[in-house]
Amino acid sequence: MRRALTFWILAPLLAVLLVSACGGDDDAADSTGGDEARADFERAVADPAAGAAGGEAVAQFAVDLYGALQESPGNLVFSPYSVAVALGMARAGAAGQTADEIDAVLHAATTPDFDAALNAIDQILAAHPGEYGTNFDGEPIRLELETANGIWSQDGFALLDSYLETLARDYGAGLRLVDFAGATEEARQTINGWVSDRTRERIPVLIPVGILKPSTRVVLTNAVYLKAPWAVPLRRPWGHAIHPARRQRSRHAVHGRRRSLPLHPRGRL
Image 1 (cartoon, rainbow, N blue to C red):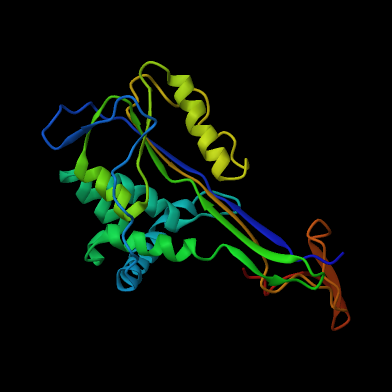
Image 2: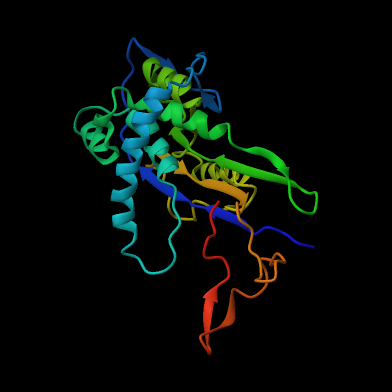
């Protein structure tokens, strides 16, 4: 059977932030007693202009991030957009020097409203998954995309209503609550289980044993699942599609000499 090559991207990023508890305040909501603290706000409608501005900021962030990651040997696949969204969720609750430093990293100053920009980009991408006709074998062509961006907080903290409203309005999310202090291992398993579900069990353990401590107060998680066929399937010179599990390279005679050539030099999603 002829099949298009399926391309998988599984790009996990984990950041563990240790913060101290904040005192109560008149504009705070008590988060005790639930698995998620979430404001009763509808998600904002995507603004195309904000999305365009956000795309420029994310592109600049992508260049910076690649510059840091490319120093490590081996193949590199990463998702600047999903990392930016995860950091944006943390940025929405930051202030002072912390907020300034996150803004600098994300190039947030290039947009009038960075939260609205990420909201637009996220909703545009969310519209892409689905079926796109059928392949030569009559099988449906499916694109699957799932992100696992979340913020996990110590249950019992007093949370600002304004922060929860931003998460609901611009990220379609809430703040997930676990007990790092009293049930550290259970919190780790809860986070890993949530990420595993969102990535079709391809990332079953995002946080290994020993990373979380009873002193942990906030965890920021980011993982991406993408399954999509090639826009131009791999094919042999005589026209038959190449199964992705078969040989990676083929040898052809060129001007009397044999040389190795990639099977899919024009490959793209």
